[in-house]
Image 1: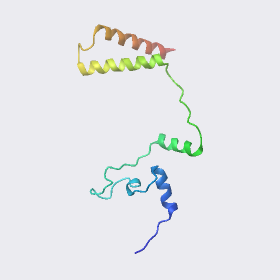
Image 2: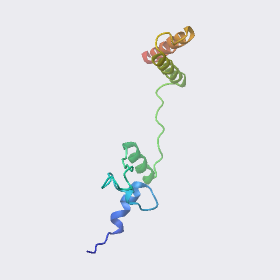
Image 3: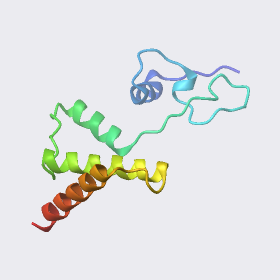
Image 4: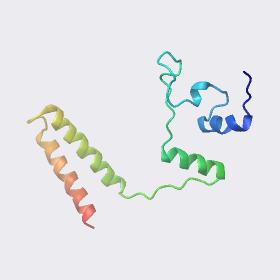
Length: 116
């Protein structure tokens, strides 16, 4: 049994993978058998990946997303989350008085910024 595959059939698959060389693993979503050498290969594109590739192909520069919060508020978010994580992991009494006051100050800043 003889068959042929046109390069125009394989080329889009190679471009999707972004590789310069052909590998059966690069186009298979799931392995055909558990003994396949591609068993750990996954080919899933996220919407952001597809959009990025389309913009690159069209020659359109990526837009910088508008910053919603100031750097100071972002720092307060980060500090609050780190302190809350410490409290969750350490349990009651794991935060010092200064850390509790820092958490209170940071959350007040966040609330004030969101109220504007």
